[in-house]
Image 1 (tube, rainbow, N blue to C red):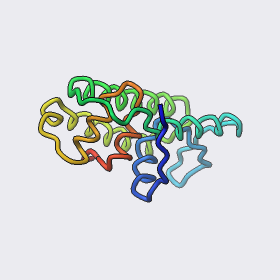
Image 2: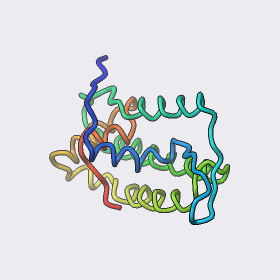
Image 3: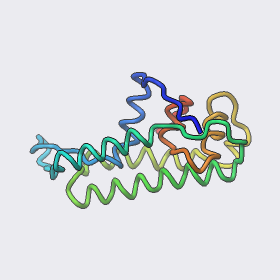
Length: 152
């Protein structure tokens, strides 16, 4: 199986940052808002960054469309991101003021990703759902590669 490598564009990087916040622990110093976060040891931060990079790789790009599977995979991935982000926030690795807007965007995306939306999808959105039909792809990779950005 070939791993497709694509240089990230600015828009891909923005999406990756927004979606991957739940997977990364931000090391903030005391902020103007009074929130502080815990820092990760450098080797742990490097591992987190490696995982985030790995999640941005599409591993199976020619899967047959299955709307039920695509919707389930995409929604599950987004729900997991919210859960991980909540845990990172609760454990002090992410500011609540950073987490809440990101979680709201992810929840909005969950609502938009439906079997009906998949069945009527065209172009990049159809390619997103086809990408999500594979159990080997992560929602961040499919969204970035297919330039499909759920509405916040």
